[in-house]
Length: 190
Image 1 (spheres, rainbow, N blue to C red):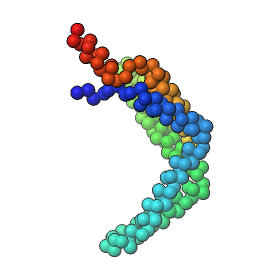
Image 2 (cartoon, rainbow, N blue to C red):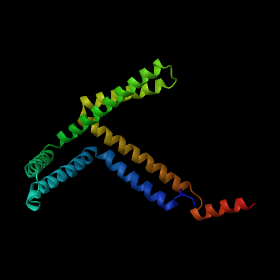
Image 3 (cartoon, rainbow, N blue to C red):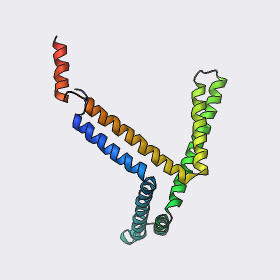
Image 4 (cartoon, helix red, strand yellow):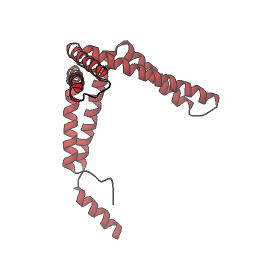
């Protein structure tokens, strides 16, 4: 039994078309995409916060009722703030990505130094990966909102390219999946 099978031409075409459309929307409106993601996150915070505030009414034996209500109020307040100031959320996400990239970049550089001391031939790979991560982290740290928009734009570009490749593949496929299997089986019998 084969686990990986060729998809049909129509499946590839529809997948490719969906990717191209999504990627085009991301490229045309990266700010709107970022805002929608932040809006969904903020609404989630507000709803979870409201449920947390109301939760002690349903569970009267909750030993942490005050903390639950406090966290709920914080969630509602922070979610509301994010709806009012979505650029703050974009900046916060950008700063978190920056610290993540800087942390891993520093670790990769440290690994490369240790590998160089051990005279390992692959040490340069960690050095390059670390330097790229540190540069990316610094870029995100000093311009987090623009950095998030850049990530959305790059993701949109990636999705468009993959979509075009899938559409191209669907056009280049000459035989339906069943005929390909029959051809394989027929060539084995010879």
